[in-house]
Amino acid sequence: THSMTQPAQSRERYFLVDGLRGIAAIAVMVRHLSQHTTTPLFANGRIASDIFIFAGGFMTAYAYNSKLTGNLSLNGFFMSRLAR
Image 1 (cartoon, rainbow, N blue to C red):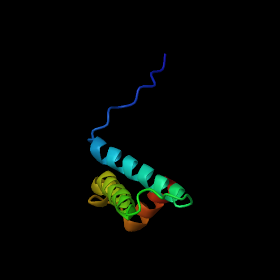
Image 2 (image 1 turned 45 degrees about the vertical axis):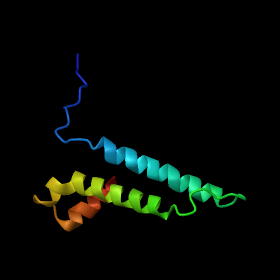
Image 3 (image 1 turned 180 degrees about the vertical axis):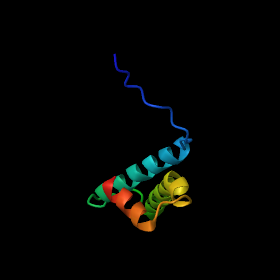
Image 4 (image 1 turned 90 degrees about the horizontal axis):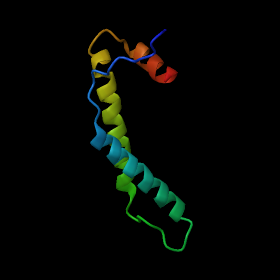
């Protein structure tokens, strides 16, 4: 039989950053949805957008660090992002 197991990932996963990004995404969603009600939630919730963007940038930089410091060109980087 043919085994369909995947190799273990050698990269560490940042669950705290993933969780923070998820919470920020929910806060942004709630803020946008509640803007159309009589009592908007997270009136100063713009920081949630900043956290979401910062965490996403961190995860992208972490994922592509070894490729960017290796032999991946800028064009190759953009093509791999486009394909993803």
